Amino acid sequence: MWELLLLMLERLGIIVTLAFIMTRLPFFRQLLDQRQLTTVQAFSITVIFGLFGIVGTYTGLTFSPEEGVFSSWAVSVGEDEAIATQE
Image (cartoon, rainbow, N blue to C red; front, side):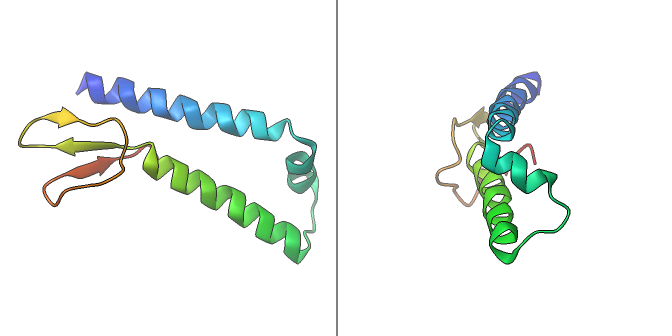
């Protein structure tokens, strides 16, 4: 169980680092600082945070209860496996 917690914290660190770097970009800062957004800006924010959700899923770990092992990336999931994500 501790192994899963450490692996999940590692993956969460990747996502937090990516979010930190993005907040340093002028384009992203402009989107976050405005009170009223245009349709294009709202679409941009939707795409950006949608990508965060996708990255969060693919950085999850697949767990096989029969073998009791975790795989590195959630690329394919068998019918007897589960995905552990940090979302």
